[in-house]
Length: 110
Image 1: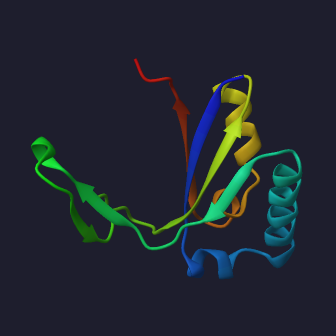
Image 2: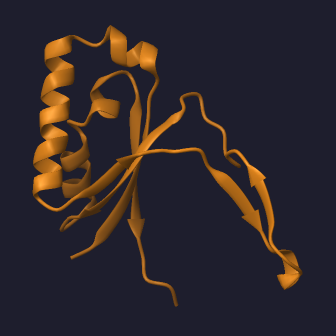
């Protein structure tokens, strides 16, 4: 079955503006996904790693990419199709609380 990586973006303000019943339903949705085997977690502080020309690793604190909303978390989902993966994440807190969830198909390396 295909694997998808999801990245959830959202901020506390959007979360706080969302109806508590909608938030509670979104958290219950996440619990159902976890129970079904989806691996998900909240994003911690990132690090950038470079090793240009194999000359040694250079590490910098912080994200390389920037976005309008902070990264909230990640998930690894197995689904039959992109459409199914999208349906699975459409009820998560980031998706319903003023944020956004990206869904990336994970392909095997050549």
